[in-house]
Image: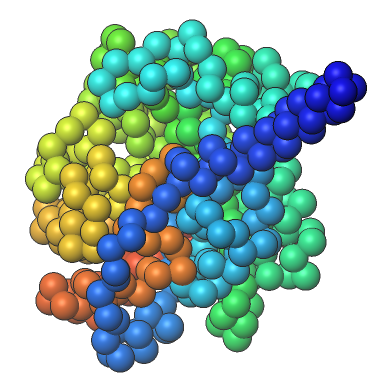
Length: 387
């Protein structure tokens, strides 16, 4: 009897071990039950003609096969294809603090370690943040290798141009660009910038939810700016032709990065204070400074970006940003699979096209917002190079 009980206990433990990541993913990456608006025939036709691009999703964190349509979360290749998404920036997360919030976090604790253990990541990733980044990047490359050409990881201007040409005749193709949230993933080593570049990363977010060796976070303790080490990191990024992402950065970090970094800058996923006040979102002045630098601003859909969950709130934020900086500097930055509650998943981005048209935006400006701006930005900002 004791042996039978022990077997049952072991089975429960094993089941919990394998099911825990699925349960966590399902609880953290959710979609609102509110019905979506009906998309007009005009919007549907326009959406099918668009080059749609999203500047930020954390799909690689959760152990889901990118090639398989999942019944949880927000992003995978089948759903990107259903939403006519041509280009997805896949960001990796290497560390988040316990009790994560938008106001005050320190970096002593590590939520991602438990997730790495439950998903059976390699031992090297347990304590090495750079190894976590490289491991997640490899998951995207592995998916691309298994995709029969439907997924392409893009790292150079030539690869991007070739992808755009191929997709013009094969609209089911999806391109992926690798990004990172927070340069604590450098593990304090300047040579790690080159390691990440070699692993395929082209967009580096300076900070995430806590201050690191490079810069201060909007959600950290110091609310300072870029460190001396961070200045060296920016110089190396510029030499390699990498893109700086100022999402999650403190106001001082934003100002200093704009002054110090001559290369391309984005804010991959954010809201705007004009429609949703909060430390996570950009002020009018910040929007204008980023636009003046030639940057692109990705507007998100989750509650902290828009204050309320729904298509109307997303449209309000986009329209407000366009009012402040013009249509050439605004894009989509969903934060899908970022532990977020969203009004829809990536298969339903036609509701944004529909909402923008109903708000009075021209078809040409809709084309820019939905992905044209990101396409033009990457065509000019990715490193030169061959295949």
